[in-house]
Image (cartoon, rainbow, N blue to C red; front, top):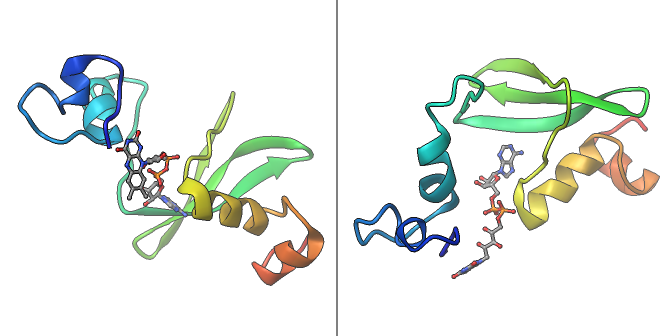
Length: 104
Ligand SMILES: Cc1cc2nc3c(=O)[nH]c(=O)nc-3n(C[C@H](O)[C@H](O)[C@H](O)COP(=O)(O)OP(=O)(O)OC[C@H]3O[C@@H](n4cnc5c(N)ncnc54)[C@H](O)[C@@H]3O)c2cc1C
């Protein structure tokens, strides 16, 4: 994948490497104090208070972890997994949600 608009990012950091979203965007941002990168985490569902998204629940090793958000949650699990997370969270047609384990 060629990511980013700058030539350096598109080449993968200027070392002739093929780029990726991680190389193009996360690499330069990972030192930010307000950013936590959690690898090996599998998002199960989006959490709500009423109609407002308040975070996500994910599995990390054997533990279930809740990540809370104050402002917004961006779901970017790809073309197949994003709809699955939404269905598990109760967003979608009732029959499809229930087939994904949601109790909506
Ligand atoms: C064969 C192929 C070649 C392509 N070539 C190009 C190209 O040359 N240039 C270009 O611009 N685009 C290309 N694309 C398109 C590009 O890859 C996609 O548009 C882009 O990757 C979409 O980014 P995304 O972040 O939405 O999803 P993805 O890149 O699919 O990333 C989703 C991420 O979410 C993770 N994930 C999934 N489910 C969960 C979960 N439950 N919990 C936690 N994490 C989860 C996945 O492991 C993955 O890392 C190509 C696509 C394919 C399939």
